[in-house]
Length: 428
Image 1 (tube, rainbow, N blue to C red):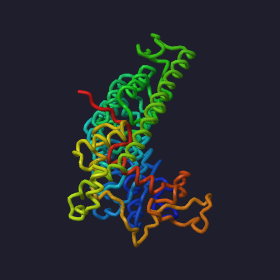
Image 2 (image 1 turned 135 degrees about the vertical axis):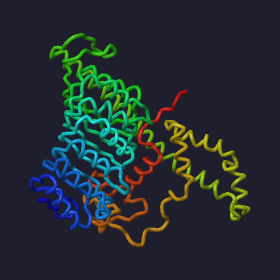
Image 3 (image 1 turned 90 degrees about the vertical axis):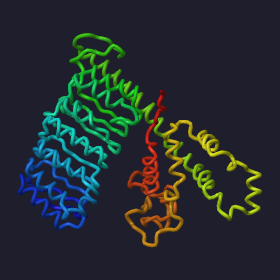
């Protein structure tokens, strides 16, 4: 049967759930729960019928409160086919759906072109950040040829396609999707796991070359156990060898590929990601002062003699706006023109300013929690409500125990202005 753990926000299947009857057990639990954040239904036998019944309920008005609260759904190993996937896609495409994590590993999804294209389209319009299709071996190369070809999800951060029977034949399509630039399919992807397939050493090198030439967002890529000894090496790899590779040659070629992958991910992408984020935060600080000052400069209060004196001593605000923005751009040389423009627009919007006064009704869920390992006196174990979101980095977020509110706010800003990765200028 389905039970919820003590915090009453997670439903976990403790016994095997089968078909429609199993779905009704989950629905009963949902009806009796006020707010659910996670559905963990792995290793059951729901099948297409059970999944259809469950997601039909989740799309109904009776489940509106759950659509806005469920952030994770785990449906690994449930015998789900294309019909069930279509029902899941319909739910993902719905309004007010808070789903961010979706596990669909080890199911029976087949290469149905229409269903895969529809699923990709719904993921594109969703807030989904994590998707696992691992172990759906029936899909094979179709996951690249159809699903990836339509996938342009701006919020997707992590994608798992392990052990799906991908072959060297789909490697060019996978490489094209990876290298499609900052507006392409993998533009926001941070982690790609593609181990346990049959890409071969040639396919692995195509993936690495695609990252080197056209992807700056990926930070972690796994391509282990991809039948490295079974295919020819590409001409531009460090080792050129036709036919099958011996075990020693395979080890050497894999080490070369691993070094190349480490170099592009950790030495290049990770470095530029840190640089872009730092410059974006710095540019926002000065853009606020310059742009908001310019917007209020025409108010009657600005006609004070002291303001005239300040204007004479520091005439920066009298410069044309184009010149002021050009000077600001010097503070962020690593950002593209488009990224800087988005930061200027963000800085010019008064609605993005933080509140001047603290909230009268404090929400414990949005505060920072003091780190008990630090000497904070009486504040240890209490919620911190400083204006910056934490007491000078002394909350538990700095030790990765919890998410610091300041870090979360910075992440939301960087997401809003598209500054989570380096964005090269387009050369025409």
